[in-house]
Image 1: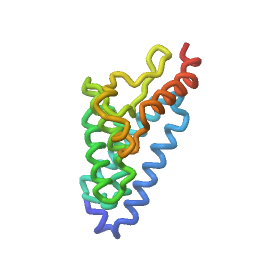
Image 2: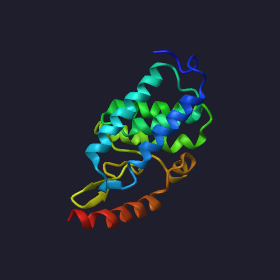
Image 3: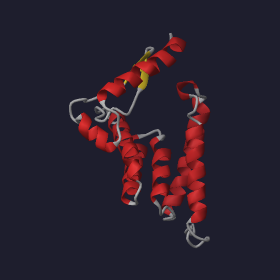
Image 4: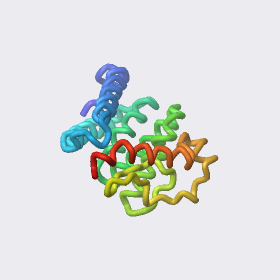
Length: 173
């Protein structure tokens, strides 16, 4: 596959990555109530396209890596989440300082996928009508470090957990 640079420069890739990211985010607007079979199929298509761009060495900017991290974090296996984490780190290295949250979220998602406790508290799920972050090691990362990384403190996480439960749980009971 020819490099995006040979095809006329980075601008088309940046626009394509932004489009893929926008579609990824739009698919999640309905939260837990979305059509998840369709969303997961579209997620797989987006990841496949991003994989092609990565293989072609077409990602260049912090924005490209940032958008790619979000797309891969919506994968379906631990390797996708770990790749998302590496992409988030690349985004930070390329100047996207706001990619620290997605770096934390992808690490949490990876840890949970391999049966370990998340450490930042970015991942919420519903179990039996209850919102949960478990398994979660709340003691490992202090709120001060969460704040530096752009992750809400424990108190705000608990408020978000309760809000999600109020919003979603009545429909699940």
